[in-house]
Length: 261
Ligand SMILES: Nc1nc2c(c(=O)[nH]1)N[C@H]1C(S)=C(S)[C@@H](COP(=O)(O)O)O[C@H]1N2
Ligand SMILES: [Mo]
Image (cartoon, rainbow, N blue to C red):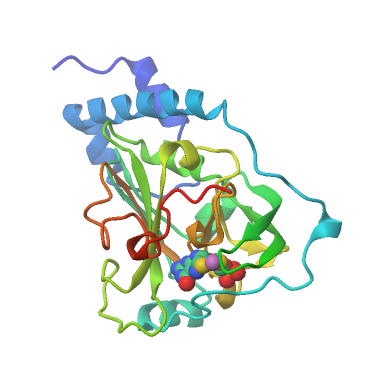
């Protein structure tokens, strides 16, 4: 097997934010097949970024526009014991896992996420139930994390698995039970500059009602895409294996998967 040119490896490694806790990194960089996959994944990332450059931004507002009260909707406090245990510990033990079609699986604490470059944006959240609210969200761009995880060829969707079983439906347990909230977006939205994983709302850590400790903000889409209580991100080539196969809790129940505003 031809060794990877040193310069290529260096580029790959310097592209990784130093703050990220890596799992299985050594094993992957030592394995020539895995290494080739990682490198082709970077090219896929690059191609997508070129596409994203043409896309517009959602409107951003000024501090004076921030709603005095940001309504909470859907789950306001997940009932499952794992989330409650994590919340009781101030989310010190919470980790965001990134897995699936990646060259490197990641497991990130809130401190890891806070050490990355942050984006703050004041945007309007529109719920299909007929209310809107303007809030200021802060967190790292999703694109940074996906670059660090190194998407593999075939990656088409980013799937967000949440901690809550929705509403009155019986909790059957497990991140992929039918009652579990989840959402997904394509790579264009995933690499969009306003797509962030927010840990703060209006300069304070997100509270239980609004999705503690971390939620998706994908600003060109409607409220139900803004997945709260994130636990795991899966990079996938198909939505079929998740939930009812339509890419989200509400899309499985008839809502549009692409909920552009
Ligand atoms: N995990 C999870 N995410 C969710 C929901 C939910 O019930 N659970 N509700 C969705 C809907 S319909 C809306 S309008 C927004 C509400 O976010 P908010 O509570 O911060 O206003 O979150 C979305 N994301
Ligand atoms: Mo909503």
